[in-house]
Image 1 (cartoon, helix red, strand yellow):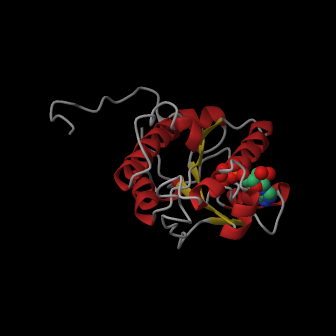
Image 2: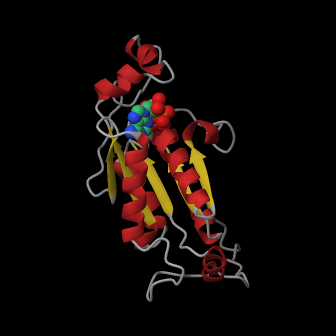
Length: 210
Ligand code: ADP
């Protein structure tokens, strides 16, 4: 619970100043999809591409966050909600810092993704759906966890014993079982360009607060 005595402190340097320094807008690029769908792979490949273009970026990855900030959380329904809430708040801080925050979390529930979307301005949350059949993800089984889940050794496993709710309005969709990594990154960058992400001068009326 937030105390009523906690007052927001305005900073002298605003997000607009930081965006101008970096030469691009800051936003959240939220990858969602089944385990093994390619979120981490694409988040990292995209970051490498944006880094080459001198963009300020950070990748927030599910497994890494669960080592630290969210190390106390399980995969129960309540803890998954709290996990995404904390990540959303953290990503929002990066937006304020003028950084493109790229997140790679299964984030299976629409309500959780919507809550993060609602934390920031309309055009600052870009949902990227890594669309891939369960069959392909299971065949890839990057971390051997699908086998464990099928044996019943992992509780609440998305796609097997817990649902994955497909995005209804993702800004970007990549079919990772039909296109290779480079093609998917090209598609994402082209879509971002069309949203004006890399404009040096920020579009008039774009949501900018301190
Ligand atoms: P996630 O983060 O969604 O759990 P990973 O990125 O860890 O998934 O694993 C995805 C696997 O699929 C990797 O082994 C990657 O090389 C492979 N892969 C094949 N095609 C693609 C693609 N188009 N995009 C992303 N990953 C792909």
